Length: 319
Image (cartoon, rainbow, N blue to C red):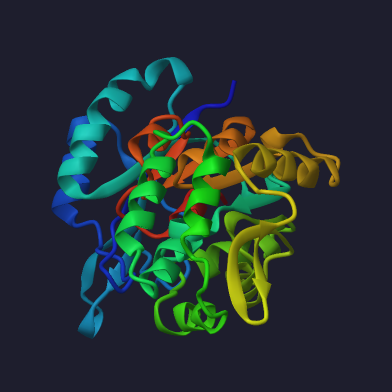
């Protein structure tokens, strides 16, 4: 069985800039885990200063080190990870750092498919909530969205239809306003998708969101495949209904599995990233499941969490 490597990555600010791991934090991590930091994989956009510890550091003005962009620690046998697993949640919370155990020697090219949710994962908003703002119903729609993402509504499809019905009568032009005025790509999403494509992975944007938004995001980031819901529009007006198959958790899972199978791969050779309860079915069969700024019920079931940092922190330690 492969040994495990502890990977620790920093948080980021509202603009997506990393908040470097300081020397003091590194020392505290080594002390608490009783492990030595021995290396770090490349994080896009950061400079390798060639520090003696062979970790990657950020340089400030004049070349003075600001701290580390990521740390990896000495490999452990799986049976020896228990004390670290017990210590890291509290420590990482206090230091605003993300952490995970990965298999020693694992590379991004070991995987065949990268599947990502869109709303609140690849992008910063829940699109349906922002659309509803234009008819004064954002609070009502957002409350249903939040409950659905926490897994408190058993029938996701019915909750989506309820929310879409509240949009009836809005002009189609509102959708473009949301794209132009409110939609932003989350930090690290572009870099992660680009790295996955460069490593030969098939990239899949699979969303309970809508075609107008997935089309924009897929084009901006270069996703190979998209699966999403479609709003019914007649004469430039939203009817309050959906067209075609409703994309829920089960459909997300099936789409992910089909994408893997089309490349002769098992789902365990795929990476699935999401934040809500409707992402759990595809995450549950993926070889690596990543919870990004996720609801507690999702985070606790993922193999890796990103609570404070960028999406491309997934690349650290992946060779």
